[in-house]
Length: 165
Image 1 (cartoon, rainbow, N blue to C red):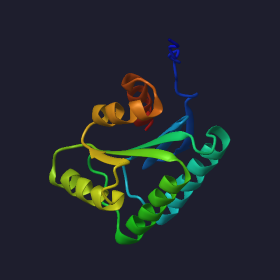
Image 2 (cartoon, helix red, strand yellow):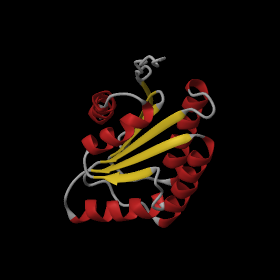
Image 3 (cartoon, helix red, strand yellow):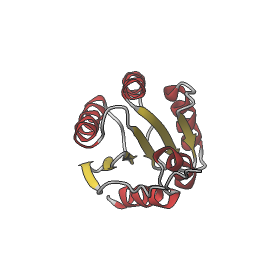
Image 4 (cartoon, one colour):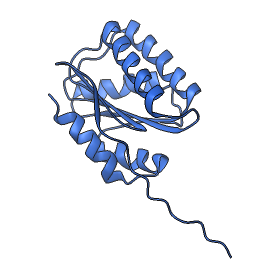
């Protein structure tokens, strides 16, 4: 009987891809984490998308498993319809290019956070490869098995990205 060896997988080196007062995007290949504290504009979405694409080209082979976690901090405003449409197209393109899982963490319990989760569900189009959650722990637990890493490792990257202000 042949047993397959368990291979320890770890995330790649932490890299800050983009940072301004409203957004932080980091990579620990094959994980990308975006934190949004302020408004999302088409200009910022396009810039963030370009940085993510550049990072994926540098660090992820075609067909590889990739994960994207987006954290919407409590109080982050709901995006307008133009941005939502572009987000939808961006997400669909991500699904076409790689084996991607997306977790959107909408932090908070208030009315704005509830509205954000509703909007995020609409953008994600109820894909089985996307989840909308309230807490980073939920995102970490869902993303980790897809990448073959521990939930604590995913959570550490999320926490480090959130700490960059």
